[in-house]
Amino acid sequence: MKHVISCEQYTREMLDELYELADDIAAKPEKYSKALEGKIISTLFYEPSTRTRLSFETAALRVGAKVISTENAREVSSAVKGETLKDTIRIIEGYADCIVIRHSDNDSSEVAASVSKVPIINAGAGKAEHPTQALLDMYTIKNRKKEIDGLKVAISGDLTYGRTTHSLIKLLSLYNNITIYGVSREFFKLPQEYIDYMWKRNVKYVPCLEFSELPRDVDIIYHTRTQLERIEDKSIEIKELIINKEVLDTFSKDTFIMHPLPRVHEIAEDVDDDPRAIYFEQAHNGVPVRMAVLINVGM
Image (cartoon, rainbow, N blue to C red; front, side, top):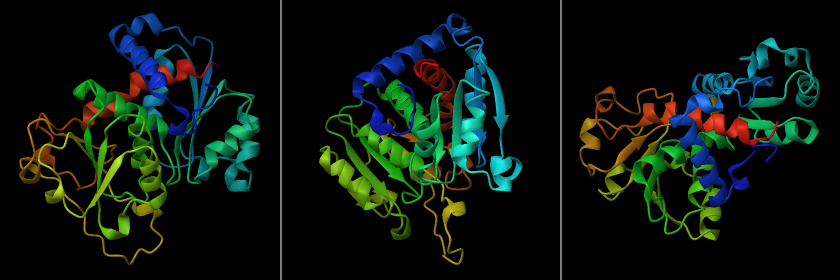
C-alpha cells in the first residue's frame, strides 16, 4: 500500500497482517531498529497535535528513519504566503521519503496523494477520517477482547465532527455481528452517510441520547470530546456527556473505556485508576502500530 488515506483501503486480512507485525515490533523492537535506516519522514501538521505527531516521530526514529517536522504549518509554512497544498507536497516530496499530513480540509490527503511521488499518510483530515488512529484503536480492542466479531461497541460524544469515530466505524464494519451504539446529543449525532455505510455492511446501529440506554455488558465505550474548533456557531449551548466513576460503575467489569484524547472534562479523573480505563494504553499503542504502518507503505 503506497498511501494511507482512508480506512476503506483495509481488509480484515490486511489488519491481521498489520497487527501481527505490530505485535512482533512490540515484543522485539531491536529487530526493527534499522528497518527504515537512511529514510526521512516528514510530519506536516496544519492543525495542533500531541499524540499523533509525537508518536509518528517516535515510530520513525525507532525504525531508524530521520524526521523533518512542521508542527504548525498553517502559520509558519509558506501556506501563510498563499502556497497551495499541492505545491507544498511537490516541494516536500523532494526532501522526504514519506509525508505524514494533518490538515483541516476533508479531502486534504487525497489532494496530497494526487501529486505526490512518495507515500502520503493521513494523520487527520478535517472531520472526515483519521485512519491511523482507528488502526491503533482496533489494535487496542483486539488486544483486550481477543475476538472482534460479535462485539457491542458504543461510540459517544461528538459523532458529527469526530473523525476518529468515522474511521473506527469503517474498521469495525469489516467484522461480523457487530452492534454499534451512537450516544450523542441531537446536534452531534452521527451523519447519515456513516449510518448508511454500516447498513450496507450488516452492522446494527442503535442511536441513543444517554449512557443509561446502553446495555450494561457493552464491550467498549469509545468516548470523544466536543470538537469545538469545528463548530462555526459559537453560541450553541453544549451539554456534555460525562463519564465519571458513578457512570462507569453501572457497567460490567468487562466494559472498557477508550478515548482518542485529548480529553477536556468528558471523562472525569476519578475514572483514570479504574482497570477498565485503557485510554493511556490506547495512546501508547500508537507507536508500534505506526511503526508497522511506516514499514508497510513501502518507501
